[in-house]
Length: 287
Image (cartoon, rainbow, N blue to C red; front, side, top):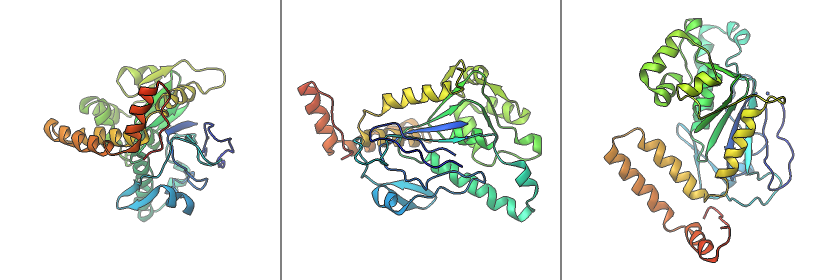
């Protein structure tokens, strides 16, 4: 397991543990204790990070205002990613478990994936290698997925006489539709990048480069597009989309109205108008 890499202020920071990567276009400090281990432990965040942005909430993590688009310290990074050779669960580890251990183990997997899904910043899964089973479930929890054409991904659990347990039965149908999701889960089919793009599982497919990080580079390009925007606006836009997709249109529009209202009293909104008037780049602070 690798530790968080050192980086200069304003650089694209990394948090890595091996191969399918998660890029978070985030403006908050994520401490070096925040990681995914090979056994899928729940993310750990250092106390300073809790004080700056994370607050515990039932069913996952919540976010407080208090993050900025301006990097102030060496470990307050604009982008972090998690890197994992994401074949999914370690089957050699799983076979040693007795039945009473499997349930809590899968619950921890589900908790980790839900933490990713609930991050209040855009997240991008960059799949350059394998994302099978839990690996794909982790990618499905991200807002956007990009992959190399040579990547392999699928929910293959039915081959092992189980079903996806980290949200795959719920997030895959929401991503590509119920009928096609059933086909892929029932068949345990593995898709390459081109096939995944054809069914709408990923947004972008890239020819793999010599370094083996084509999807990661695309994810960073997308993250750089997201980073200049107002942090509060990004947070509530994601909230409006996620919650709106679970309800009817009338209710969804009401959610949008409530989320829009959160941006009206912010200093960032006034800064955006002033920057437009003065023909300069806005300096957002997430306030």
